[in-house]
Image (cartoon, rainbow, N blue to C red; front, side):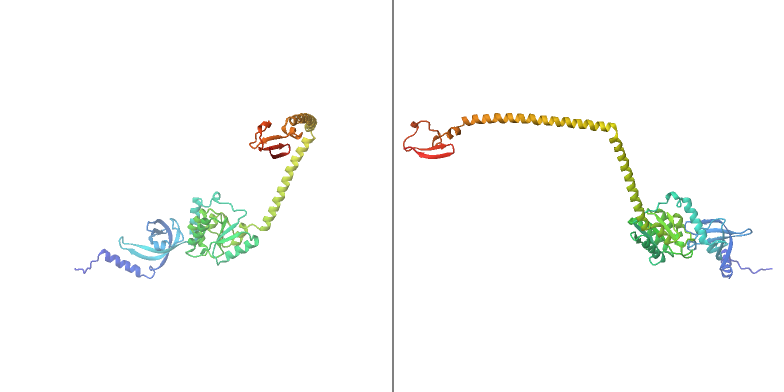
Length: 398
């Protein structure tokens, strides 16, 4: 008996089976639930894992383009629902599920991503209270990182102007929703830190869905807040909303309005505090002065001080007596010297040529100023100068 046979290559068979799987309406797009095991992320960003239940298992691959869009990280023993298509991998001849996305069974993917990041950052110490910076009591400038068109910035400005118009507000606008939001928020925080003119920063936005607020659960935003040298207040959504930014920031406010209430001190309260401190300083100074006055009074009322005053008084009397004695002695010496001076003057006047001239005598001098002592020293026609006590005159010898 002869049998008609047609031989196929392994590739032909696998391609045929692959075609059957691919063309099947159910296998082309289906949800499969199970537990993750043997999960591996390779260097290219693809994810390989096994999806199993108590009775069977199937290999799953999720390529980078889909894996990078996942808000959470797949872990072993995680119960998930995976959506994808069944096909055959020709090199191994095995069929597998090509996943497009996965969702934790019973819990939203965003919630899982939130808890995963929260746990990781907590273990790294980003939430430690020892790293949190204190808020300034009297800030001169407050930085704001939020949308320039949102309700949050309007609420902060309204509260700030009501509480203390003297506080300067600086808005560093940022996108606070969507794919571009994390990078925008990070840039705004870094810019304010670079400029260093703000004393505190409010980062946040108004309320919204979990998806709307998700940028504040971004790991990059969390690390930018952690690195900030300026204290940061997280003010995201409403009071019941919770984000990673709330945990890593230096202070968490329920809403942007509450953040402004916390950060900006009320002007009237500051003024009252200044007046209180002024009064306290005045009272403290009065107490100090009173203390020293009391000490001085005790000293002046004491016997030692009185004895000292008596000694000073006696010394003053003694010095006064010495002064009077010195005055008398000095006057006596002065009178004696004046008398002696008068006598010396009289003697000098008697011996002075001027005294002789006053008595009617005169001195005859030749024109060369030599004194003529004898009549033989002149001849007829000689010119001479006659010096009197009060002047001189010229003459000629006849």
